[in-house]
Image (cartoon, rainbow, N blue to C red; front, side):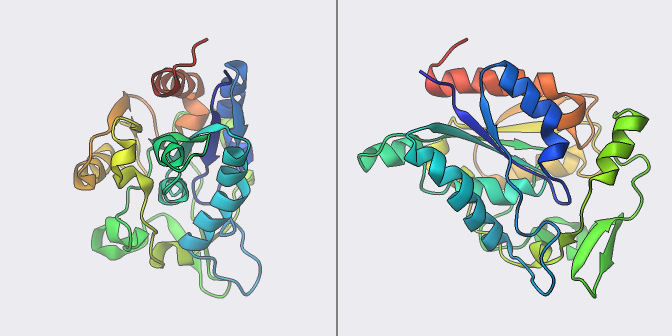
Length: 258
């Protein structure tokens, strides 16, 4: 039996290139990986893609095609991706699909230092004062935002790798902050025992206290891995450790070993 497909949903301003190390770690373990570009990343001129549009895009282009192939899937949301991935998995758990006589399904959700936002509220609701985080600069003319200063942005990443990662950043639509986040599957009983969170304890973008507050506010139980020295980008600094953790989860959730 094949291992699940890992679908990685990137952080704001980031693309699949930023997840090369993690993708390679998964590939070495026998996993297929998908990491699609969201419509809200470097949006077309004159458009303001919503969170719901990102969710629908991911569901249509990544999640459903894998399920139609009768594949099992793990959805991994990083940072902003935590608003998108779990919502794209809504109603598509293995147990729900089996009840409908369908094979394949989402077997689990893993959030990496990710936003956990209640359905119907906005991403801004989790930030102090409902304001866009400091360190981001907005461009009202284009309706986008970017990191104001990338120096030190990638904590724990070598200077050369940090510079390369920063060069690949792209503007992101401001609309993701203000438009409602669709309900995420993480809140559903179908994912009891099948939701996990990777806490980055040296994170200066979304601090560990903020991560813990979101976990507590979710009202459901998560299996948590704490990375003591990880900043906001464990996909770059702790790729092997993240991959091993997800591999352990996958074995529990699917019974597929080795």
